[in-house]
Amino acid sequence: MNDLKDTMFMRAPEALVEASLRAGCQLFCAYPITPVEDMAEYWIKRCGEFPGALPHFTESELEGGAYMYGFGAAGGRVAFASTGTGISLISESLGWIMSAEVPCVVFNFPRAGGLSISQADYFQATKAPSHGDEKMFVLAPMGTQEAVDLTMEAFYLADLYRNPVMIMCDYTLGLTMEVVEFGPMKTEGLAPKDWALTGDRNRPRRGGLAQSAPGGVTAANVATGVDENFGTMSRGEKSARKRADKYRSFPARAELFEMEDAEVAVVAYGTMARMILPVLKLLREQGMKIGLIRPITLFPFPVAVINDAAGRVQKLSVFECNSGQMVEDVERSVAGRCPVEFYGRPGGAAPTPQEIEAELKRLIGKVEVLA
Amino acid sequence: MTSTAEAPKTGKAVFERPHIFVEEGTPWCQGCGYGAWSRALIEEIERANPAKLVAAADIACLEYMHEIIPGDITIALHGRSVSTVRGMKMAQPGALAIAFQGDGGMLNEGLNEVIHAAASGQNVLVILGNNGVFGDTGGQFTMGAPMGLKTPTSPMGRNQATHGSPIPICEMLAMLPGAAFVGRISTHDPAYVYRGQKVIRRAMEVCMAGAGFAFVECMTTCPTGWRMTPVEAVKYHEEVMLKDKPVGILKDWDPATHPPVEAPLARLS
Image (cartoon, rainbow over all chains, first blue to last red; front, side, top):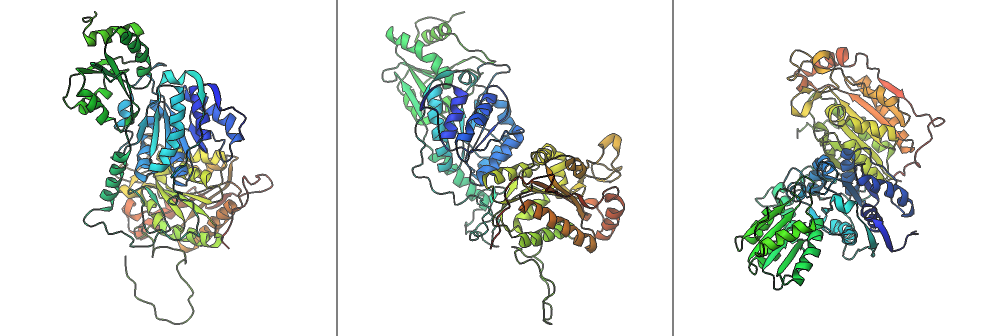
């Protein structure tokens, strides 16, 4: 079925579509906005080689959100891709999807006003992807290979947890071209989707009006008076608590670089972390004890890892391409155990290696503040 | 649930509620027309007997469809049930797919979606319950409201200068090559309900044959939203709502010019 090799030199957006196809995605809702139009084109070009993958080109992002809800609820594997503006447009549907616990994967390429790097949509992704109390799991890759691996895994995690999973890229990654290797599709431990609305009228009646939240997926082959005994708790509270437990049960991840003997630690994710790493290695060779903590899951945030590090370093600094968003999560993780500083480049700016070097030296006390 | 006195057992039953009604009665207000067309629709589902049925209904009055539909249904966001059911249909291609939207959801919030659906020609049945008002929230006028309708948001009556004109959605969709079937029915008296049920039957046959996009607009009264008695509402419906709105089949499926988009749908044996 597949005439492409497992190792390829590819642009990241296309590699993510290839990974989605190999992970069994059947419907890819991508609406043209740079770099997502490349994903739509690649999907249309390649989907014919994967049985079950539909050559559908989504008419609008609003409809893409609704397709994702309907397709996922009916048991299909589905993805949506856009930049922050498109995520805003499907925000309403995402609330519905999360509350109804419909699995799906969302690709996000946040941009600043124009066409440049940005991490300004961190809050949108991790704090309030929609109205309501629900959350989605957010995975932030640093490079194309990791993005591919996380994509393959995201479809699995979405089904396993019955929740949307976001791959939080950025515009720079969207323009990156690298060698990537595609692994096998993961299926261990996945139960059949017996909750899916297949429409099968031979199926026995279900014992619940709404399987999830009010307004969520309902199995309409319902009998009357089917409430489970929830004690004093309402159906709404019960299902909301169940979802909150689910969010807590998802293991947070972070990657540590040179943290064993670090005196100063930098916290950064995505492309920002990738920009810092070569500079950090250079300064390490000069004997400066700097380490890096790279959160891979932005939600749930790796609170324990950062709290533990905060007990061992003199100070932490958060580097972001925005005016200060993840720094709030770092501060609550540190919980006062060490000082937290912030280095931000908002509005589409990215630091040069020299600027990163100057800031890291200032942090470790080698150089006083540069003008 | 209202209780009814048991009728004396005189012999053969000549009138029953559809066997596959999963709830007793319908959940809408007294005098509402939704009960009439939804009953007709359920009877036609029973007649067509699809092996698989997926549906989506907008939040608002029609979300109560989940109490009576004999298949799997999602409550979609306001204005999104056509796209939601299109998604469901893509995942379950063998299913009869039905979207239920009110005039607020379709003509105000989700207008682009029904037009895209008709243009696509995808084999889904879309039902519009049109009573001219946002019934669930107390009767504000929608883009389906007739000129002159007085509501809390058009207290002097709907007029062109302030509120714009109603959107003739049936006529607009019938223009599109993807639309296999377009019909309009009314439920304000038994004769219209009887004729309307035949339109719904034909629409369902068209979808069961895999023909493509089918659309039925159900014109109904909303005495609660219009602030009228049911009798006044029927009179207003006849004189104003149905004015310039032909009832019946506006565009019938012609296999010679519109080949089916998919294989006929399986039925329960």
